[in-house]
Image (tube, rainbow over all chains, first blue to last red; front, top):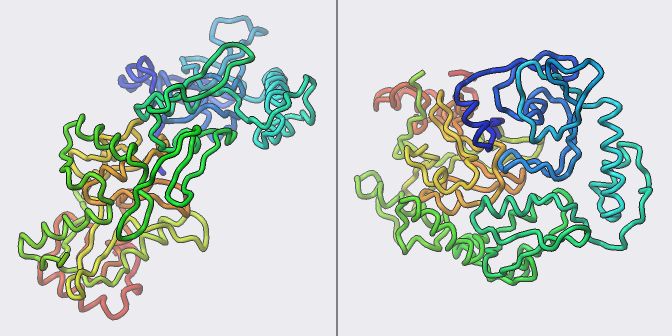
Length: 281
Length: 160
């Protein structure tokens, strides 16, 4: 896949449309970056490793996991003064100095991982990251749970992007949890489960033609010819709705047909211009 | 650069060299061929044709993509899948030609991106059904190419 890093934030997009570049200093390296890009993306381009769990190039930055904290210093600040910011949310500006792996940054990530380890003791992802930062055991009281959700809300943002907004965070404070309040809104696309950094969303993709996610069971539509699973009827209907909303032609007879079956449309088109014979049905 | 990937389906002989070339070029790990972006077909035993992404001006895949992950490369004119993809698969359902696909081996959504301006399928196509050039081959040129290449297609020097 090609790497492009346009940012979703409207302000940042407007700024980047002017093709302005700014010069910033990351870990002592002077680099040019598009104005309005986020520090995390600029660092990613330079192969500087900043740990992050809730960031995804296609989704709104959220700043939930707090692992991507970096130290910054703006021009004009006193030399001793630095600020901690989440790099996934902080747009670069001219003269900005960034430290991605300083002692203070590592200490902060340690605290975050210590807390997360108490929250999700069974998560391998958090366990491995914590060990990387020297946290073998949490210094807080462990939750007694198999749940591995770290409340990063990547599933909530993904479902918003998909256009269903089925997933939400419910309740407040320590009782906050992620769930699907309106089960009808879920179309069983599995995007949330695939994007979840800690695999906290349980699902069965295909069990004898049934799919289960968020305690809801779906039927599955399969391609008659190849037997490939195409998705749930709700999912296909959602894509059809999306396509027709955008003015795409979507003949009803093509509605639930697979990509493979649709290839016949192309060959019959060729038959009409006399290139090949019409394939027999 | 005005070069485009010209497809002449009726010159296809269903040799599947384009599919092999695509699989190998797009492979990410040694020994794990990727799913090809180009497909050659044999219909009813006697008609062969090749099909790959048409890079539509008003592309369905782009229109339904919820995160604008499909971006047109201004140099090659091809639509490419970028790392903004959230793997929802809408594009696969929406493409009327079946040219968007999911590659389970590499766990990613794939489409023809003309290899960023150096398509392997066209490089190795023995008959001129696929050519990367400023214009499609004439019948005489295609015949000449077929005569040269059909005997040993993988001997074609790279860059030709």
